[in-house]
Image (cartoon, rainbow, N blue to C red):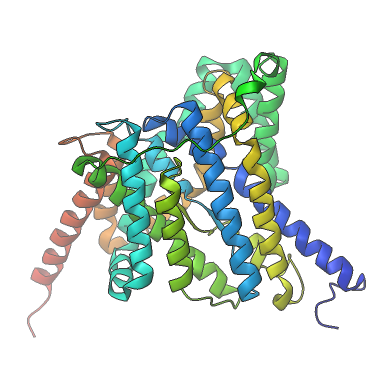
Length: 401
């Protein structure tokens, strides 16, 4: 009978779908919350504002998972923009502080929603060369991915056990490598007495409103790159993952929701939410349920799991703030290594545009700032210029007709 995962019956198959959704949410949160906190604090968020942002992200992406999966009967899962958080983490506090970063988050949300309303704008985003978008992301991630290797030299007692755990699990249980590293980090923190020093009274999460301020430099340096990496690294690939399993929910409604939720959530300190990409397969694949028409249950369970993490945002932020130096950066760097590898490979895959990808990557990784605008934006600009030069060269070498 279709929908029965073997001989264990439909009830067991449903339970398996629920478990798959819980795992999807668990992996999504634990594997990258450190990146989100690092990114928000890098652009000026106070600990309370960062905890608020984490809470808002958990609620908005969890609610999106539940609503879309339930209504469409498809395993539509959402997530925070991990590449976007990495972009923030590689930046600096903009002029005007966190309020101007919030203004940039709001712009990102509006642009995402417009992609759902205005089809030509969505096509324009899709026209951005994949190699250049991947190169920009790889350049941003590079600076974060070297953090564990720097930290292990300066704090070997705290960092080495985390990296060793990650390496062992990469060999034997790759899916759990980052979660295992997080568990090892928690053990290190417990041994060093971090949890005994936490002020639990300040660990209760609350939404901290931030009035957005708009600064042209911050909009260019944060808002536009955040929009580009969220669309090209999350929303478009996320839709492709769903299509690979036979689900076609259409882009309009998810973009309207994620864009609107990003714009509204920005006021609470949240940077961006989007369709899940990598973790989407955990809920949409056959491992979730043998009957693809029942995998929507995994999407709902994933959303509920995300929302359950919301009340823990304050505690997670307080613990991260008290962690040994380099520990949270190590978790973030290890979590992003796979994304960096995939982005770098995509950036340099096409021999015809390899130099443009390389220029984009190194400029984005350089940390340079021109006119107050950071390296991610200039990396993309430099890559487009080099790509145009390469195309002129090819046209000049083409034999006349």
